[in-house]
Amino acid sequence: MTSERFSGTAPLLVGIMPKQHPEVLHTAAGLAARLGQPLLCAYVDEASYLVEWDPARSAHRLSLHPDADDEDIRALTSGLKADIMAAVGKLPAGTGTVDWTLRTLAGDPARALARLAAETNAPMIVVGTSERGFSHRLSEALNGSVGAWLSHHQSLPVLVVPYRMPAHQDR
Image: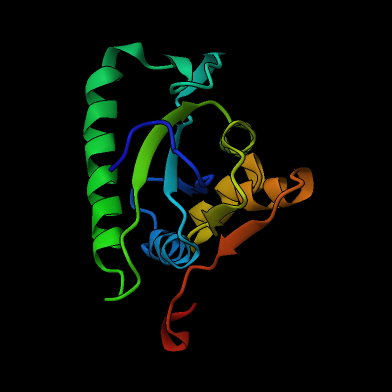
């Protein structure tokens, strides 16, 4: 893991979330390794809202649930860091190492990722598709798709990594 500032090459930005299918991080880490770029992983806490945007650090936020805020965020980021280390650790031999960092943002996921991409001059944003199932489709219908919003409102490429499931399990 590196510091918040990347020297030299702009980082590849990947939006991550707890219990996300691992293909998103594996794809982003592999792409970052092949391109020789650092990986900037961003988790957007939808249960908080943006108070102030400070490009040098994570966003200043206020929680919609302040009584369970700090402890939950620390536990969640610990889990996300473990997921990132596992994905970077599974890179094939010979692809090199990937420097990475994790940023926690606040507010609407698509807009927060867009702000961070602009601030870091990221060459691309990597996101995953939503999981399969009725509850995920309902959530996407109500909240919108992060990948769709980014692809319509960004001037840089957006890579949407599909959720892979064997055809015999697809329902």
